[in-house]
Length: 485
Image (cartoon, rainbow, N blue to C red; front, side, top):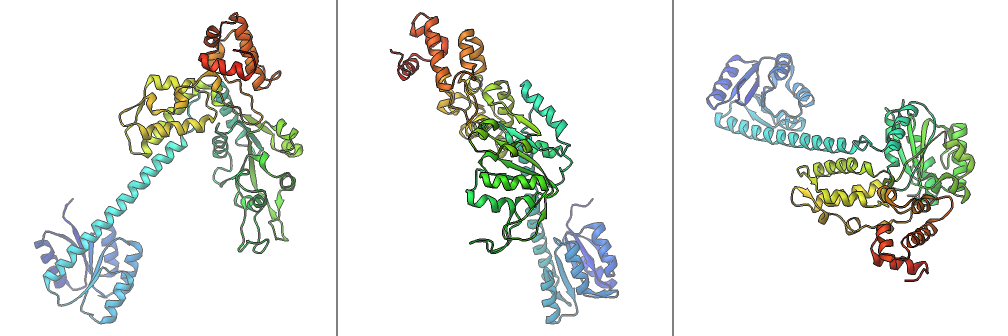
């Protein structure tokens, strides 16, 4: 195949074609010719010229009509109109339709060749723009694929069991309630259920009930008609309508106002709803996935969740363990985030120093998977070499101790010790720390301190070592609970 630029010629006069071909070939171009509009369209399809020279006076139709067809079918092809019909109207019409330029016969060859060169330059720039856009789209898709890889091969048995359960329940229409602390990945579970459901080709509509003021969430969910309230300047379909044929994911369902929960319960029962300001009901056709960072029983006890709504939601309840209870998943998750952010920032894939990994594994992750993601992103930004070290990690991660564990999300138990620390603790201390039925967090912490001191016969240095904390921290805790120093 010739590497020369190819110039297409559509002209019904054979001598004109021959002259144009000779002029072009002397300048180093290749040419392809057609005598009619129909032949011209076929020539363009077959040879894909870089520039087209088009005569307006053709035997099988009006040249301007052919130009319109070319602009529609081949919008990036520069067309130079070459014709004896040199009226001003033809010139204006050609440019309006999208011709690159207009030149009348007889023409000066150098003028024509100059126009061809400019058209080729324009075409080349356009192609570069298209290629750049395509490359940007490819990069975007690579990042999106990395985003989609938030379902790594879990080593944690509980997480594997949850994903196996998802594969079973996803094809059904059953409601699902996902429970777990903030940041554990409840939205990822919702995405996966939708992807594996019979509604996968439909929309997945997400609404965070905690993100809107109480007086706004009803309109967001049910939609409204113009004039339904002050500020309703136009119709808004709402999330229930947008989820038609797909899945509705309501995050932080326990933050939905109680009176709105009552109205939403009727939607689940009657499968229809009425937008604000409307007198007509609309059919509800969606599969519901709800999520909460509160234990359902606690939310019900506190009056944050209607009990009857809970029974509608919990056909299946998925309880996601916090990251501190599945530290064996941290390396897999860290690698997923590492690949994502290196790709996004255009960096080669970094490695994580073993000491940095140790810090990641020791930390208690009160913000769970979301916090780990942010820590890895920060590390990728700060790393100038090929390896993430402890220096690239936040201070609280590097210098974490057993008693640094943050309070759990509402209703979620937290003993403040990693699995490895618990396994190495004496049985009586381990029992005190994990007995969430008998003590609250402060009581378990105080009991663990007392048990450690008792086992070490009051030796604070040994007690601190037993608990895995520094002596100053131990003294602070003793003072906090009035146990003396």
